Length: 279
Image (cartoon, rainbow, N blue to C red; front, side, top):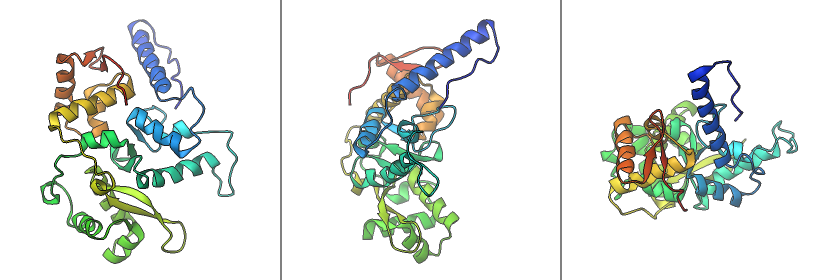
């Protein structure tokens, strides 16, 4: 995540670019980029609790918070494998955090590896949980894999690939489907074959059983406020991309928050919370 460069524009365009650059800096500060890198799994869990959600790996545009950037330590010793100890630690955390009940991990925001705090997860999950048959777009293979994990408990992806005749690409597709629907979470690893340990998956509602019983409209308002707090300011497109809501629904939630004096419009369709949320 880097500081935006001056692009040479002037007048109103420069003012707009300056506002965007200032917002970018506020977000980086909100995400702790001005503090020492995360060094322990407890610090990583606290980071996820604070921001509510994060990508595993960020991007140059700092689209959303990212665990990798919060833990990046360029002074960290390099390992024989070619990467730093900081990356090694973070890679271990993303498997251990769900097993400890400290963060949900799967492909969710932007269809990329994401981490959700237990509190935010409880706001996003259906309550009561939807039956698998009620979830649109879930393939037969994904339903079969989910039924197996529901029946047998945490299961390694190596076993799933072998028993269901899946190659790496088709297994990843299944994992993507189940992650987008928040149906399964990473849940540790298993050394059940040669090479690297295999990712273990578990049913989300068994790993994180504390669901929020309130109506979905109330939970979605709190979820949106969590995003506004993490992003400092955000618009309907960012809310839609983060939580996989239809754009119209995201826009309606933001307008509802504004009418309730829980958020206020700023500029260019963005909103900010009226007060920082406690966690």
